[in-house]
Length: 269
Ligand SMILES: [Mg+2]
Image: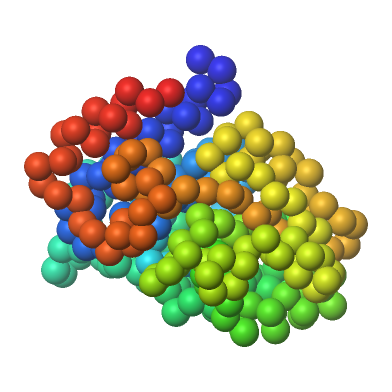
């Protein structure tokens, strides 16, 4: 099994966890959208010897409503037992619908109020510089999320501070809460906006493990500048009847579809 075969198998495992978990709650499509990005980050790109290692790379899921994908990835990474995922959204348990800092090994910050994760990332990246540490900070945002003004205030600051250890990823699935992103704020202009704010920018297929690996391997894209990867994705990726559907933001997985969807994920290459 070569490197990308292993990554595909890992993504399948994460997506199958998500199908089982999302018999409860919403945001199934949001979570499926980022499974490949999280796989590549946690299994190849980021250096995390252990969740408490002071020199570890940091990951912030700014689109916190996709918390299930983070939990499924951390469990697949063996930061905690995969059986813990069965407690997703159960009363009295710590697998909340949005991440809560330190609720589980590997959950770095509380998130879900959109537009805040990048600012936290700037703080962590600046701390690394001030402390002479070499760790990097990765922040995953939604494509609807970057309409928040706080994102652009932070983008200006990250450029001024020359935070080349900060890498933002945009989950560009062209869907947000109530419409297509292109109907609200066209995503075709992402590249030139980020470039205008001083960032190095690359666009990549967010479901192509090899392409993601290649892009992450080249950061920083511009010397001394923060980087952003616009990852083109499909909401609900992995289950054909949910792919690209706005409804996947809100619907739970129907109990009578679980086995079919698990089989479908297994059969896809
Ligand atoms: Mg989106």
